[in-house]
Image (tube, rainbow, N blue to C red; front, top):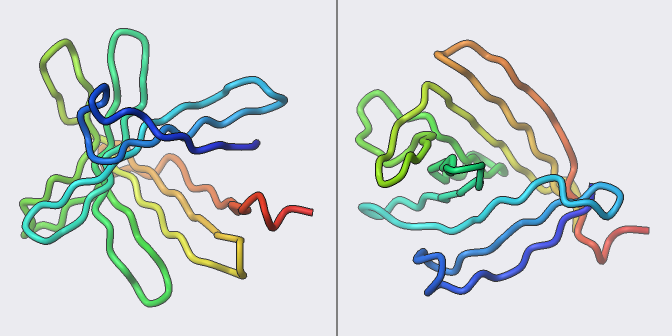
Length: 140
């Protein structure tokens, strides 16, 4: 799978510095997500919109540094009132879904990232994948 990140006009999207990550397999678009970020009380959150027919799914992931890893998670700490979560829109309404996800990303060498992605539904694990992300300048 190959991906390309392209800017989206802020006045259209309404969020800070939005980007579309367009992923293709055999030159056919297989996945598109719109990425941005925001800060709340000094904490940084990625907000990702996944366009779906008649709706969007939105992931709000809190960023944190853990040793040499970047962690992005929708899980809320028990004492936290964080923005984190996974939501779906229906017209002008926003509903929190019983989903959680966590990405752990680390650089394994210059130009290469390793990601571990885990997901839970009603606290039951249902997805765990690992993959590498290569910068185009480091592909042979």
